[in-house]
Image (cartoon, rainbow, N blue to C red; front, top):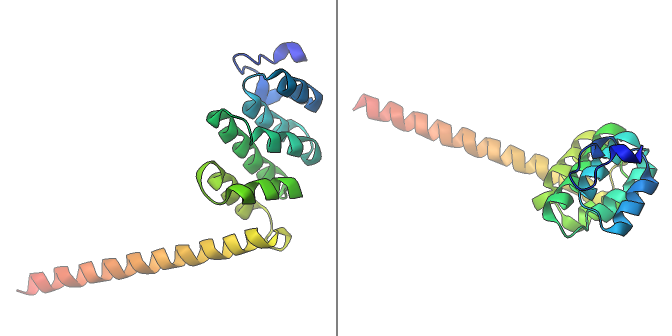
Length: 154
């Protein structure tokens, strides 16, 4: 099926189902490897896709690295777990930049009990931050409403 995979334009790479073809394209220095990593996330097992996604996270092209992180999030959504290598790669980048959505997907779709310690802390910290933002907004709205009520009484 290699004829369906156009490495130059990226056409058809979301359907790639052959990790060996991805490896060969990586060795050749082809374009659109991040896009193909998403295809592997959809078409292959977690164990087959994981090392290729991790390699794609190191690509020099920022857009293709972004697609690799999308692939990591996709794997978390589809499998409800990640490999230790993917957890490590996401943790190395942190909960920012290109990895933010992939980390969020991991925190959403992987059961809390199955998360490594850093991800558990990240999930707890995220919940605390959300609650603090909610309280701040509620306080701001309350003060604003009280101020408006006082101004109407004058």
